[in-house]
Amino acid sequence: MTYDTGREAALLSLLRESGEHGLTLRDISDRLTPDGKGKSTIFRLLAALTERGAIRKLPSGDGRHFIYQYTESEHCHHHLHLKCMRCGRFIHLTEQLSDQLCEALCRESHFSLDGERSLLFGRCEACLGGENA
Image: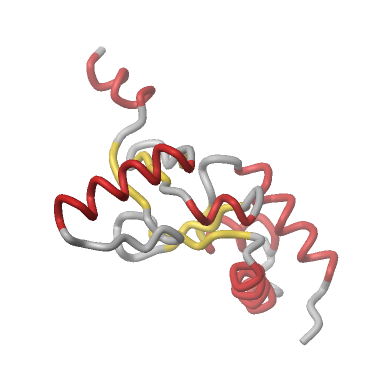
């Protein structure tokens, strides 16, 4: 199936610009289809881009939504990520640190993590600083 390459380029650009924060489907559709026309195209593009590995679909933490984030490379799928529940920032751990954490968790808990989808939720340094101030 062929998709509108203009919309695909706009979608990828929007996700690239969102950086570490990612966007919900509603955020994306509000920005790319403010008149409400073309939402189904956006939804299909998100699915296709996720399948191709160009973007990542992650749970938002509330269990009701997903966050879409631009993926710099295939390498990004092979390490753990942290998500700040206050500001929404995504933090990419290095592959070395991810491997060390996964090995320790597996050794201690006898549990295997899915390295392509592993996301840990908490608060980033900036948000923790705001709480302590």
